[in-house]
Structures are given as structure tokens and as C-alpha cells.
Image (cartoon, rainbow, N blue to C red; front, side, top):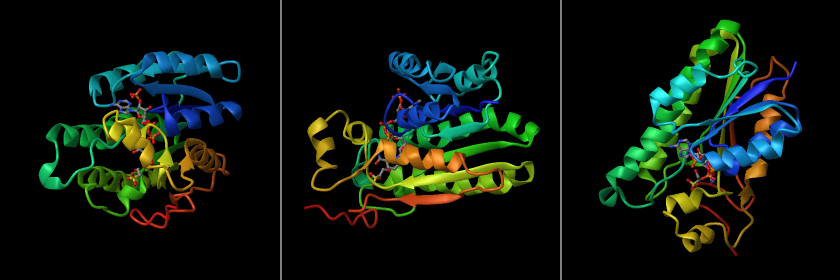
Length: 250
Ligand code: NDP
Ligand code: 8X3
């Protein structure tokens, strides 16, 4: 029987590429994000291959998260794989110059949003004593870098929650693992720099960054291991990157 995956942040970047590789490999999909037109476009692209359902919510809106996940249609109610991917950085500035709305966004989306979606799904996995949760952290959650402050804190929290989920859900046979990417060329920097495309592009110039498909490949590898194998924690850099701050730019 085909598995079903719920992927948050499927309208762009890593989440979209994950939905695509899952579809290639016969995993039915619940794709989530705020931009409904992108969800519908992706659904159209993938539904020849697998069954696709779209859920449009802001992960910050817990009522919407809980009610939409609780009312999934028949055929999509059993979620085998949860990919907690929705998230972004908002701003890059010293802590004393930080914008409190940016701080709220990062804590509310990257940490609280991930918790809400997880809570909405974990209960059924626990009852079935089976399920797989992949949390998308970041190298920013392993290493703090100058001006990263609150984004770093939000991803350190994801790292902690990944471990905490693995500990607490162990007795229910639920697999939990994280991928922590370095620099991936997606819309991430465009969001961080509030639509400044030139500045965003500059982040990925002078070296060969990772692409969303590279991370999606790894996520698919993780979820396609045998039942007794759980890849718990994985850091992935582009070859040109050695740490959060060391990038060999030409
Ligand atoms: P993108 O900006 O390309 O994608 C972000 C996705 O998150 C979008 O689909 C967006 O959908 C969704 N999202 C953002 N805010 C919300 C919200 N409030 N509610 C629901 N969905 C939301 O970036 P990436 O693909 O790069 O980012 C994916 C994950 O990877 C993030 O957690 C990011 O922190 C992490 N990451 C990225 C790295 C990089 O260098 N790119 C490196 C390490 C980690 P929509 O706007 O439609 O709601
Ligand atoms: C995204 C990677 O280095 O911009 O999490 O924080 S970085």
C-alpha cells in the first residue's frame, strides 16, 4: 500500500523538491503552504503520479493547523511521513538592531509552527505505533554566526525538538530525524532580505551552493530506509562550505 507524506512549506525550495521526489517514488502527498495558487499548480504537476491533497494554512495559526489536519478527506487521513520543513529567516542584523516583528515571525513559524503541525500528526502515529518525522533544521542550529541571533535560536530549538521528539516517541516506534543543511539556493535569502533579489543572489555567488533537489534526495533516502533504520541527525554542506561562516568563494 502506498504511503502518505505531509510536507509543510511545499510551495517553494526544499519542500517543493521533496514533494516532487516523493511523487516520483509513489508516495501520496498532502502539500502545505500559504500560497494556494502554487499548491494547486504543484498538485496539477504531480497528480498523474500519485494522489495529492492541498492544505493552505499559516503554520502560526494553530486553530487552522489543528482543524485542517483533523478534517483531512478519506484517503489522506493516515499520515505515514511528516516533513517539518516550513520556515525562513527574517532579517540579518545585530541583536541590538533586531526588528521584533522579525523575531516573532522566526520563533512563531520555525518553532511554534513546527510544534503545532507535529502535535496534529503525532497522535495518530502514536496510536498506530508507526510513523516517520523529518525535521528540517539548519547548520544555523548547530553553529551561531554573527547577526544570525534569533534565526540561530529558532534552529537550535528545532535541533533540540528533533532530539526531544526522538526520545519521547521512541516507545511508540516512531522514527524521528533531522537534516541540517548549509547554504541551499532557494527563495530563503529573498525572504531573509525582504524581497531584495540582488542581495539574495549574492549569497549564492562565487561558489557552487546546494540546491533544493540535493536536500530532497537526502530526505527521500532517509524515509526509504528499512523500518529498523532511523537516520537521526545529518549535516549537509555544499563542498565549498566548511562551517556556518567558512565558505570558499572564488
Ligand atoms: P523557501 O523560502 O524557498 O521555502 C520556505 C517554505 O516555507 C515555503 O514553501 C513557504 O510557503 C513556507 N512557509 C514560510 N512561512 C510559512 C508560514 N508562516 N506558514 C506556512 N508555511 C510557511 O526556503 P527553503 O526551501 O530554503 O526553506 C525550507 C526550510 O529549510 C526552512 O525551514 C529553512 O529554515 C531551512 N533551511 C534552508 C537553508 C537554505 O540555505 N535555503 C539552509 C538550512 C535550512 P508559503 O510562503 O507559501 O507559506
Ligand atoms: C540557512 C543557512 O547559513 O543562511 O539556514 O543560516 S544559513
